Image (cartoon, rainbow, N blue to C red):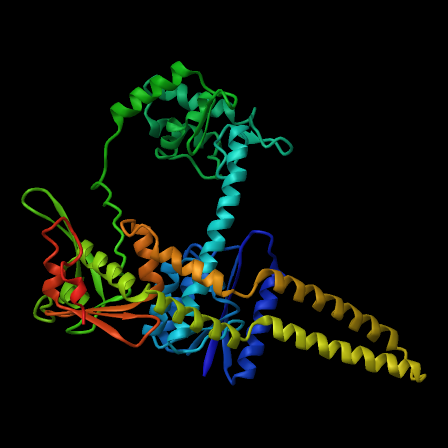
Amino acid sequence: MTAVIYARYSSDSQREASIEGQLRDCKDYAEKNGITVVGTYIDRAYSAKTDDRPDFQRMIKDSGKKIFDVVLVWKLDRFARNRYDAVNYKYQLEKNGVHLVSAMEPISQGPEGIMVESMLIGMAEYYSAELALKVARGERENALQCKYNGGMVPLGFTIGKEDRLYHIDPETAPIVQEIFRRYADGEPAEKIAASLNERGLRTRTGKPFVKNSFFQIFRNRRYIGEYRYKDIVTPGGIPAIVDQDLFDRVQQRFEQNRIAHGRPAKEDVSYLLTTKLFCGKCGTLMGGESGTSHMGNTYYYYKCGNAKRHGKAHCDLKAIRKEPLERFVVDTAIKVIFSDEIIERLIDLVMEAQQQENTRLPVLKEQLRDTEKRLANLLEAIEQGILTPTTKQRLDELEARKEALNTSILEEELKKPVLTREWIRFWLEKFRKGDVGSTEHQRQIIDTFVNSVYVFDDRVVLNFNFTDDAKTVTREEVLGSSAVDNAPPQNSSDIV
């Protein structure tokens, strides 16, 4: 087998050395398992909460070239800390015949392995969300004091290194005042931009001025001294560069001249079954689409990708309404999975899989035992009078390695505590007792427990991550609920 290694670190308190450690552990894993490493993809200072990572996207694209069989990561949270991205991109890899493997979290290929993987990704997302809450608390405290909270500093301002407050920049603030004054007096934005460029002046990002450069400037209320961060608004919280009268005159002219271009943005609709929903007739992934009735109402559907791209001649499976299908899948998952008996079975599977996991901790402890053995042998040689010019150097190296390993072991024990039965039960109870009407709760259940859904003309087949069983309902039962305010199928208790 051939593999590529994907390594990543975030910008928060991490450094280049963490990449070296990931590569070393991944290469060790590959060597022990007879895998040939043919390349690496590395993203430095990129968070896994987003898929906007250059080498990550290059790796996903290259997976379709059939040049490697495995993507090897140090841990799953290096691949993604977002369940949608994890499922979506893992599916893309598998579609291209490439498997995702974690060097520090080898997970079995059985049903319990899928559950463990879902929980590991879920916990990584939970960690990111918890960290985001802590950061948000700090940013809110900054906002109450009108301090800088990150992002692009508007032209005309600087940020104090000590107090982190906004200060007027004496060099660029006059440019802002000139832009406001000339526009309020009726001068075209294009002409203003051209004259600024002729004088060698540039935007905050160092680029020449264009017409669009002024849109954000004209709308930015910080220029009249208003500090704003999310729901915190403090008039007079920062020094003003232009007065209220000039600002209002610019707003009036800007509104008069503003011309809307293009179509209005599409409504942001979440299709929760994306990457999990398949056409039962041809096996193609089903995707979301919308339609508008003659009454002006918008409806959302899932449609076979084959039929969507090539027409009914290639697949005649009918589109199926989005909301009732998603709600039915969630209701069925709750009914099938979250009985007391199944929850206890899931806990047993996770505990068993967890005990079988080969984490980094045993590797570190083995390295420590080996180092201590080498130290003991060297000290015994010294006691017997066997000394060489390099003895002291070797002794210092082994002592330093022992100290580093002890530190790494302590960090690993603190970073990855073993999951208890009580914690796993708490995790599962969150799904059982959550608000089933919440889109986010529905997403969590589908992402974690639903493996795949197949739609046929006469039935829908659901496959869950924890079992090889499938639950089947008729397509009529699903569609029968569409006319009743998107309620779940009336005969869901009749599933066989």
